[in-house]
Length: 236
Image (cartoon, rainbow, N blue to C red; front, side, top):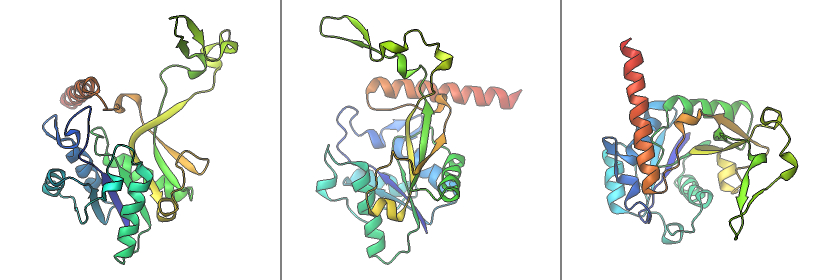
């Protein structure tokens, strides 16, 4: 069986109640739950949370909350892999024959069901440990700048100053939407950023970290712009 696990703890500091705060008309976590269901590839969609209010909202939008996440996995230092491992092991202990688990972040309003399906195809076709979303850096990281304690500019890689941008190797970063992984990968807590992981490439306009109130506003503007674009093209 394939399972979606959506980690959503209650202790968000920078954006209070971030996981259930209304984003463009519905609680943030609802976007992830609905995309998971719409993909049609999951036998169960489970939210891992320590918070009763989040659990209530998650159930209202069709997710299961069959356990309370342990306190030691609900603090500011708990990593994603141990949280998903806990949920995976809980399912196995309950007698479920888990094949693959997809960690879907609760703050991923630009996630699509098509990308989720594509991620599963990539995971299975490559016999990978993980398949996860990535997008391009907008500027060559080899020409990144730094500012020292005296406000002076320097390059991290000064030897790249005379290299044309188009001649530099393209670079990518984690898009932070979902991580497909095999049961064994999660059980063994294998690292995600390795050579046995494969990319699910997303366009930059569908990627936005949401960690601060500023990020939230940008994400809403981006969503509304995409909505306007879709309506405009469908009408013409």
